[in-house]
Amino acid sequence: MTTARYRLLAMLWTAGIILAMSIPTGNLSRVRPEIGADKIVHVILFAGFGLLWLRGLCPPGDDELPKCFRRRGGLFFVVGVLFAVGTEVYQALIPVQRMADPYDATADLVGFVLAFVGYYVYHVRRGDRMSA
Image 1 (cartoon, rainbow, N blue to C red):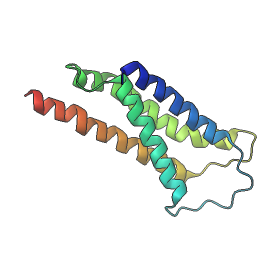
Image 2: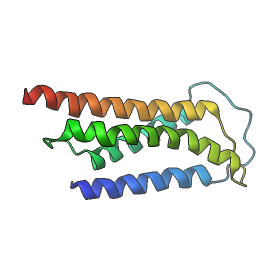
Image 3: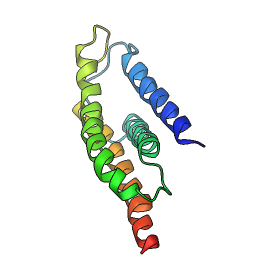
Image 4: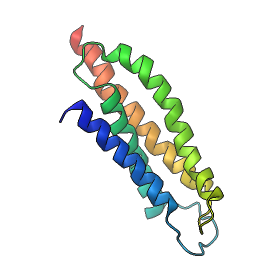
């Protein structure tokens, strides 16, 4: 798949996250910190978000991948962390029956950081070692 298609997928994935966070869920019970299906879904959503955007911004196989990752990846890391936390703030502010959950924000961050570190180790570090 081309880089442009990965960028399109990343945009659609991001829009899907925002849409999913905007759907009213009715009266939710109190915040529950246990690891359940909800937290796993959050990890998967934000791992997908991170991987798709990283693949679209810094495609593997490019000779300039380490340089691109340092330049674009660093900025994207900040944006990704803000987006992960911001989705929970967004849920607290929208006028539908949603509530912010700090454990969801943690799961979002875990998924995003796993994707970021995984992409770095698998593509950037591995590419450096293979070219040396």
